[in-house]
Length: 181
Image 1 (cartoon, rainbow, N blue to C red):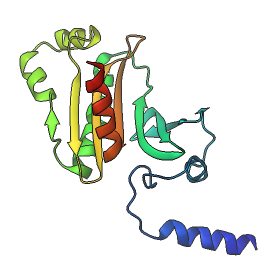
Image 2: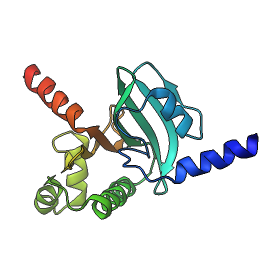
Image 3: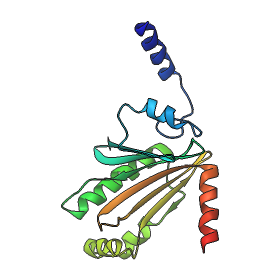
Image 4: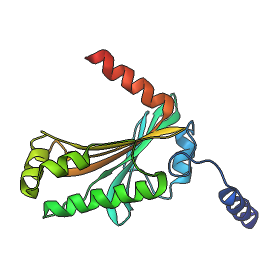
């Protein structure tokens, strides 16, 4: 019986699907996400799951967001504690390059402007650390929006955030943010 289950599982995994985030379609239930991941979540709540993983050789928290028990967003937050700021930026560019290779050039990208106006790398890091600027790239795709952000977290550590959102979720978030202004 176990052999039949394993063969069936292998067949199901090998069937191509139009995955939206981590091999899961938007609308997947929390139980489906837990079944898909091979490790125990580091955090689990009604609307979120978090896992500690390595992505492209970079330590990250992988996040899954749910509304009404349906997957609507997912993302990564870098967790590496580098001694040198350039290593954080290198992580950011590794992730960005991977996204460009998979999805093409971003629809919106602030990085070239900031890099051009901050020839001194230390001044650039200081501006990011003081939250004066944030590197922001955005991909608008048929079924999802992807945001890539390089900033500092509340502990003043440099971090890269990648957010994948179901298209309807991204639009709802934008309207919510507009209404707060």
